[in-house]
Amino acid sequence: MHFWRWVWTFLFCLIVVSVLGFVKFNQIKAAIAFGESFPEPSETVHSIVTEQSQWQPNLSVMGEVVATRSLDLRNELAGVITKVGFVSGGNVGKGSLLLQFDVENEEAQLAALTAQVSIAQLEVNRFAELIKSNASSRDQLDRAKAQLAVAKANVRALQSTITKKTLLAPFDAMVGLHQLEVGSYLSANTLITRLVSVSDAVWLDFLIPQEYANLAEGDVVQIHSDSLLTAVFTAKVIALSQEIDIASRNLRARALWLNPPKQIKPGALIEVKLSIGNNLNIVRIPSVAVRYDAFGTYVFILNKDKNGAWRATRRSIEVQAKDNKTAIVTAGLSIGQNIASIGSSKLREGILVNVASPDEGHAVNE
Image (tube, rainbow, N blue to C red; front, top):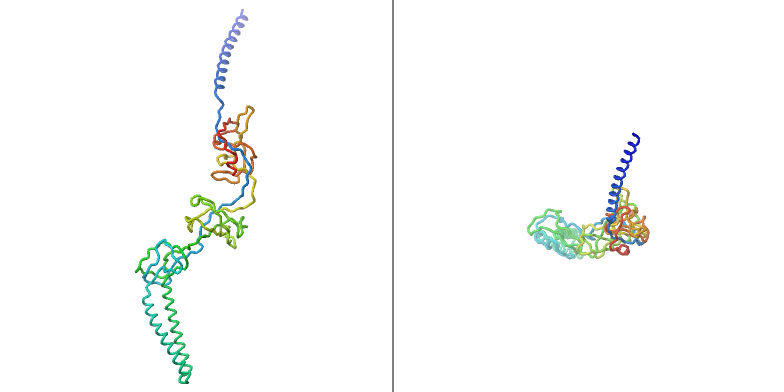
């Protein structure tokens, strides 16, 4: 009697469990079917096809534009200004008057000394005639000649003073700014203005690390500036320092830049690029394709799966150089691979990828 009671109880529990399991199975099956009704997550990116390219390694340093001729104009003697012969920021020709100090006293003294020279010359001539007739001694003639020489020396000294108070342009130049006015008194060694030569060429001085000190005279460097220049220019190295600076361990070099644009002024900083090796076979890709994380530098390669869909695969690479547009890859990529470019930041390993308007590979390999 108790045995059948336990049997019926077991059968009842089995039926209840089976019914509940069947209901739960249908619920899970419906959830799976509902989930499968959604498409697989995917991302849309642009892509490029890698091609082999040539690349010349170079070194970029900053160079300073230097005028081929320049000087700070100072007065050697003190005095009062009587004439200003140039305007601020203007051009002056060689030999033109820049500044005239008051030389009225010196000119008066010069007139007196010139008269003394004439008198001393007459004395010399008179004693020379008297000697011919033995009416004078040789000693008197020598004294007269000495007095004549002294008088002429005094004239030259005074003329030198007048010259020092008359400042002339030593070469064709552009002048700086000034606040000079007629009647102003300037003490000796006052900075008057700066003269910068008017020339079709400028120097470019730059420093290079000691490991690249094999730069030679005649080598050509490239000149570039994002803010000042719209094109790349070239200059020729004309001089190298004979020793490496012991403080910075750099070598100073100077290049001659012919016909620079008018907006380039002495003192400007310009980027200088030097070739430092042989041409290398590289792969050039857009900079937006390069990704970084704690494990290094990588890109996403796009490969097709068995269904013909694009999938993203991470690939570690070595980047030799990089700018705002392109990156130079020396290892990790081969020719003909599809690389995710714009939108690569959205990808992860194995994700389904939609390739939108792929760029031509040669667009980044030119």
